[in-house]
Image (cartoon, one colour):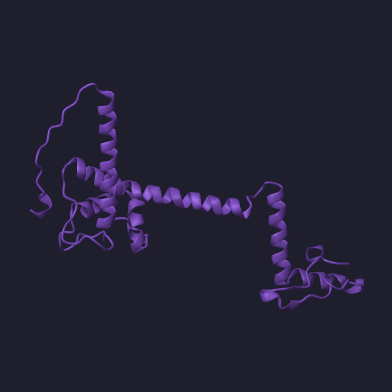
Length: 197
């Protein structure tokens, strides 16, 4: 009698250092010891691992479980959706500041945004994000508190990138409207940088 899970294996365990014997490379001949030998074999870690592997293969074959590639792809898609939902309030806050002509920056522009009021003015952008996080935006709060510092997406560089993207979108829309119209004119006006006030 053999254990069918180990039909082609010779060594198992961590680093393949466990030499296989009864029920694997050698048949179980003494049937009077069969019950005890089967119980011992069933409790061995390498047998339990082989059972899990066999169970997974059957589930994948029967379409009850996705294969590893699909599972990894699903995890990647979940990460992408989570990152997008984390970025959305940051982008919306920059958009709000732009539409209302509110300066973004203060004295402290980098580092983690603390949920308590800081002693120094850390700028309108960080203040608005803190306000959102403290007043019900759970996704944003979790993102600001739990993300790595290099993945918070609130630095001045990221703000500038988002502003540049908004500028390109606005410019593209203006060009599209100009292309559709028969006539157009350009009016220029001076704007003041109020961030240094």
